[in-house]
Amino acid sequence: MLACGGGGTDIVDPENGAPPEDGSVLVDNRTPFAVEVAHLRVGEQDEAAVVRAVVGPGERRDVAGGRLSAGTELKLDLVLLVPPDQGLRVRRKASVAIDGDMEVILALPDPSDPFSLQVTVQEAGGA
Image (cartoon, helix red, strand yellow):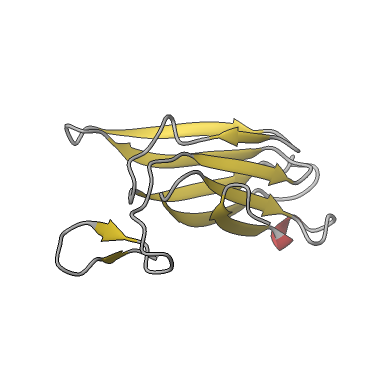
């Protein structure tokens, strides 16, 4: 959560009073399936581009398309690429606010059920 600091226009983190930091978005795919990740990235001249990446099973990779400015908010579209003979593709959304490197963890609590897909967003290197 981000909020404005008193007496100025700088954005600060209300938990520790520090300004947010530039960072990236890492997807940690802890599932047996590949995941397609897409988001809209707006450039400095307001040009927009869809950034896509595929993260393989057990892989962890940067999907942001480069460093992002502190406070940038991304809406990620995540698609679990389940093979047709094993079931349907599973789609989830995740919102990420950049404050240093952020991590999106994908896990299947029930490995036999792709619809049990859980998405957790946290600071990179967290639990």
